[in-house]
Amino acid sequence: MGEKMGSPAVQDGWSRLGPLALREGQTTQAQIYATLREALISGYFRPGEEISLRRAAAVMGTSVTPVREALRQLESDGGLEVFGGNRVLRVPVLTAAELEDIRDIRFNLEGFAATLAIAGMRSSRLRLIDNACQLMQRAADAGDADMYLENNWRFHSLIYEAAGRPVLMGMISGMWLRVGPLIRTAVNAPLHFQRSMASHDAAMEALRKGDGQALRAAIIRDIGDAADDLTATLQQTARSA
Image (tube, rainbow, N blue to C red; front, top):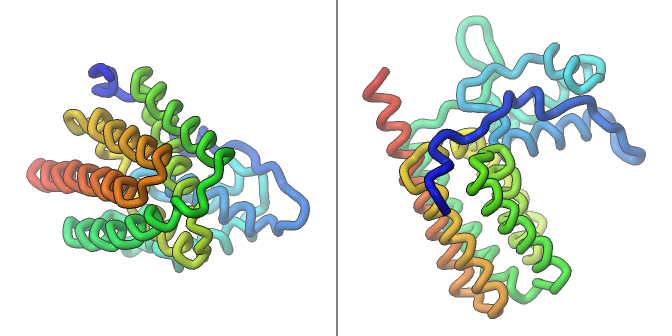
């Protein structure tokens, strides 16, 4: 893993969405909600970035009504917030105290899910997890921050889903919804991707051995290292403000 991540390739979040491919059995609102939620978790948008109702509708090729309802739901989830006198809808800007709170909650939720995941792990799922890990390594080597962040969530969610606890999974994704946009700000932290990949590689090794405690330790180390980088980024931003 070289130093190529110093200048990661980053695309505009809206350009990565594109028109919504509607599927049978789901309402347009539900699909818009799921798409935007996944985008926030994967770091498509940055903290403080305005989420425009009309732009979202135009990009996704839908009317404004289902987009409006999806955005309201995301606001209720904590993934968006109303800000300022003009009541602009934006991606929340977390404080250091909020970040610490989320970190500690993630330690417990994701650590617990990791220990449960071993019993539910199947070879087909393990191959998907390994694929996500390989794609993250490829993204790190190529300097592709977008690809890295997308597969980071894919890697973690595939592990936790193996626990077979949908309520727990919902709580975990709720934490990622809040912290996902901020994770993008850590890509320039010194050695961030090297430490992150070391934790992911350790998680893969634990999965192959069926070692739940080692998997939990790797996941917690990954969360802690990322939180340290994010805290340093917040402090640096505050000093330069």
